[in-house]
Amino acid sequence: MYPKLIEIGDFYLPTYGVLVALGFLAGLAATVKLARRSGYNPEQITNLAVYVALAGMLGAKIAMILFDWRDYAAQPGRIFSMETLQAAGVFQGGLILALFTAFLYMRRQNLPLLATSDAFAPGVAIGHAVGRLGCFAAGCCWGVECDLPWAVRFHNPVAWNLTGVPLEKDLHPTQLYESGVEFLIFLWLFNRYNKPHAPGQIIGLYLVVSSVMRFAIEFVRYHAQPLIMGLSLTQWISLVLAAAGAVILARTGNRDNLPQAAHA
Image (cartoon, rainbow, N blue to C red; front, side):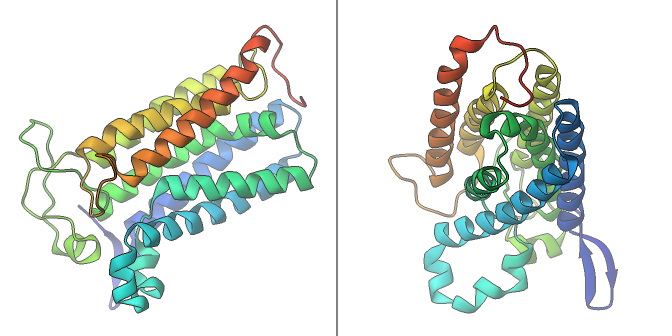
């Protein structure tokens, strides 16, 4: 679509990078707002958000390299190339490393694990929603061919050169599917956070709903990797994350009548 926002000579500002940055800022603003309502230290929350964002980007790239290991093993130099740096990566890989980093930081700072995670869940959703618009602009994470009225076509050769997206073919707009779903999840969870809930319910709902929707969208997304028992690696990760969210919800289910806990 429009992979280069600004181009001056050999330098260009990628639209994907700008939208990811805007997504991070939107997510941070939402998280800090919810954290303040619950009485958390804004500085601690901001630091946690930065660490989580960096871990998320690193995890997404690591997962992408692992998923396409044969290609990277044949050309190891690609691992440190601008192509890899500018690629979106695998969101679930980023989410896993981000959750692990968040766990370590919250333990170190004596922050309540589940309640703090609740404050972050809506922010993760809106950040993901805006970031997927960046994927659409760059042409990455494209869908399989279809003949639906809302199919999209990519025309820009730069997008093909950066991501390999097919040009002049009708494709499922999987990036927009995911962006729209995550935006709706954000609105729902942001509103849900302001209602009484047991610690862990918000992050549990996010993991279940987001992962289930990602699992479904993967059926119409193009995959370069071989499938495992008919499912992509991303779908298997989605199942694990959904199961983790279900466990959290099951453990908090008997506390539905508790008031919203800021420091539980």
